[in-house]
Amino acid sequence: MRPRDPYTVPAVARHSWGLALAVPEVVAQRVMRMWMAGTPLSQRDRDEFHRMYAEKFAAFYESWNAMALEMFRVSLTLGLFPVLTLTARNRRAAMRVVSAGLAPIHRRAAANAKRLRRAR
Image 1 (tube, rainbow, N blue to C red):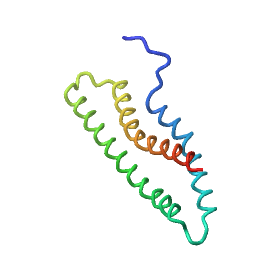
Image 2 (cartoon, rainbow, N blue to C red; image 1 turned 60 degrees about the vertical axis):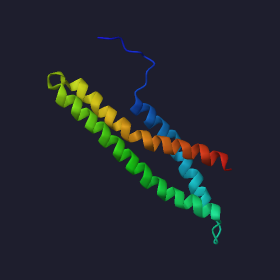
Image 3 (cartoon, rainbow, N blue to C red; image 1 turned 90 degrees about the vertical axis):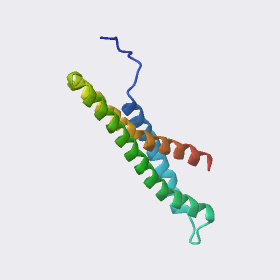
Image 4 (cartoon, rainbow, N blue to C red; image 1 turned 135 degrees about the horizontal axis):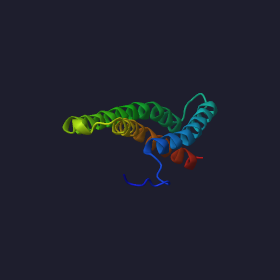
């Protein structure tokens, strides 16, 4: 058995932590923008409000696709090597699937936080 690197953080933890930091910032920025928008919305506000909805759908489908692809890889691995299917291996496979699903959402949330921070 190989020694574990104590400084390696699993991808699921990285993505979860990044989401925990980025999401409240993005929500606060956008709620403030909605609150401050006047009755005749500016083109910039309309674009931002449209982006809010469109990116949710895109992130959902990217996440769904990444998880389906990872599930396919896992099923091939488990199907080709059925003798080696151990509980720890199954847990690692499940974590890879969850991580693949969180990656697109994390990427978009972090990009939004960075973009909205600049827009002030």
